Length: 384
View 1 (tube, rainbow, N blue to C red):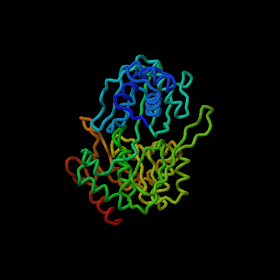
View 2: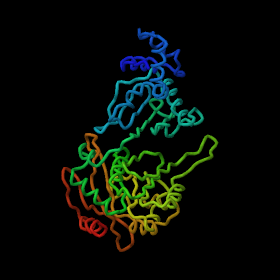
View 3: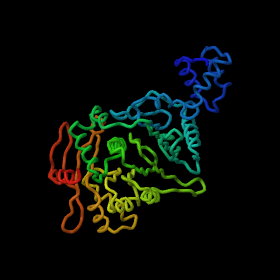
View 4: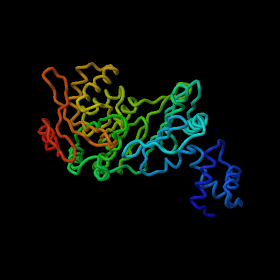
């Protein structure tokens, strides 16, 4: 088979990306001629085969998607393309000719995921065939133009050692988190958008006993624990006719019938919190998930709001939360953009039955004890 130099592929890829249309040998031949390269049949077919899978969808974004440390690619109209790295957001030199080019790219990507995006439905959220999470909003609904967000899913997740090496937590913090998982404490990983909740949860699940059966329920499949026994369930939005939706709440109920040793909800964001709390109160030790929250102290209010929307009264929500949850692991971003584990907190019930979170451990360059340190230590010791 004819071998093609990497720089030739890059030249052809760049020339094809500025246009639109199907990837065909004829277009490859034209791009080779424009670049002053040989256009023999063998060369054209070799280049076509090499580019067939990666040029058709993401066009000028392909080089960014191939970078090993990039987790998100964000397009804000034709003149701003950003990437998310472990050190934060960076503006790239990639540009589109105009907003129509961004719009065409959004429509191509949506189509590869089996969805449609147009003026009637100017937004789309779907998982692409390679696992990438795709979201887009068309102009003029969005400013400064059509907006595309791509969240990459790597085949290999981070380990706790990787997170230590990146500065996300100190070695003592990694050992403490491993003890929390080994003791089968029920925990939530909390933080704002982009703080690394899914990355940390995946790393923690990788430390679980290989004999355990993990059942993962996710809105979009992102968790990649290094574990021999993982079953994943993924929600599905309604199709263009409004049919076929499968909600997280439905999947949590199904997961409970699948004999999970650990039930994992990738992101608790709605009524599924009721099923999760019920599951953790019926013998499913070691269950976990992620939750958007500004701080560990805000978790009870956040769970209360989600439970109320699902029909669970405030008192019942706090009662189940206090009985089900053992630990909250909260993450945040430093001013330099780095993601870090900030604290571990434990739930405490007051005389009126309401739950509040008490800091057990603060995490910086080293660990600091909080007022809930003894409660956390006791919980780990009792279940170790």
